[in-house]
Image 1 (cartoon, each protein chain N blue to C red):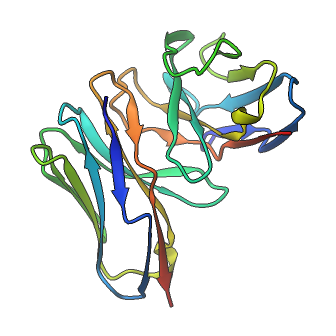
Image 2: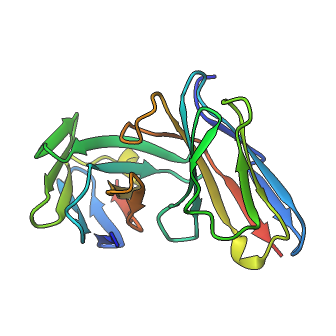
Length: 115
Length: 111
């Protein structure tokens, strides 16, 4: 596709519910990143994939957060037993090569509200 | 631990003015410094990327500088236009290859 797409764009969940957020990176991009952005703050790194390999998950805030990219293209971020503090915008980005120093292209984000 | 700060948090200027946005970082061990623009509902757009060995980068009316020794970067916008209104974020790629972000400067250009 022309750019990074994310779905859904908005998600309202009840506390304790599981959610799954999808990211479609730019076709052929090797690297994929997930970020969490709280209101009024800059994004915070969650995890990084190179193709299907999850090489860095040091930013995942708890074991309730899980990400996968099984075929090296589409990625899913799953949050189990959602809590109110999980409310944020979840951003996905991709870059062309394996270097983490390249320009990243961002999707529009998924805004998650946990009630 | 790397920390990135952007001041001011918000800025409002009349159209046509030149302006400077500031970004500071605490650890000079960075691979690059990037400036992004964030528009509501449209995600983040990369504006300029300055490698650690570089001093500045230019794109159109935008010029970004980097001074690693002082832990500072500036984004200069010339002849501002209402379409420049957005939140501008800087991010430093740290020694762990993670982007560490500032909270952004919300810029409003008044027609």
